[in-house]
Image (tube, rainbow, N blue to C red; front, side, top):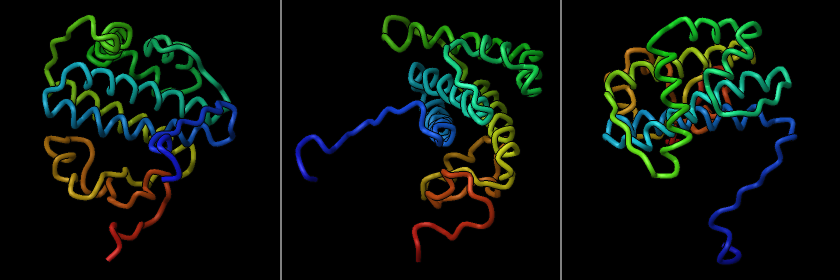
Amino acid sequence: MANDKDFLKVEVDENQPVAFLFLFINAQDCYVAARWSLTHALSAPSCLLARQCVELFIKAILRLDYKKQRGHNLITLLQNHRKAVPYFGQILTQTKLTHLLSELSKAYESLRYGESRCTIDSGIIIQLLDELAYHLRKVYLDTVKAPDAKLYIASGQEDDFLCNNRIFSSNDISTNPLAHFALTGDLPPWPPR
């Protein structure tokens, strides 16, 4: 490190041409982290990460059409764009999913300040989050014409991620960090041998 402040650097430029890619990468990472957090009974972080995952997937999809979207209420984001993205409308017809998204939106307003608590059924939330992440990710990947792109999972974490995962399978994941970028085709194993 060059100096004592190089351990963390955040660069903000919302107008950069690849903002959609950063949204997508962060959405995937939040999904994986939320799922891990849910399996380890970390209620508040689980809710915050799950909400962030869904919001970032929605905004990544919208950014592909150059629609920069403000706001954090997941239901409102879906309602405002359900005509442009048919899957958004499908989500809104499912009672469990809309309840989850409504509660996650409330969580964003209260849990991030640590002033409230939540009670969760991790098993149900994991199933719903898996469904949302899979289908939102699919909308994005189909739009960028990379439908077979793999989801990055850190080496050694595959079994943990796939445990009780009814949506994603070993065919959907890769331990190669390049998978973050929604590349198509077979990626070499990671770490290189």
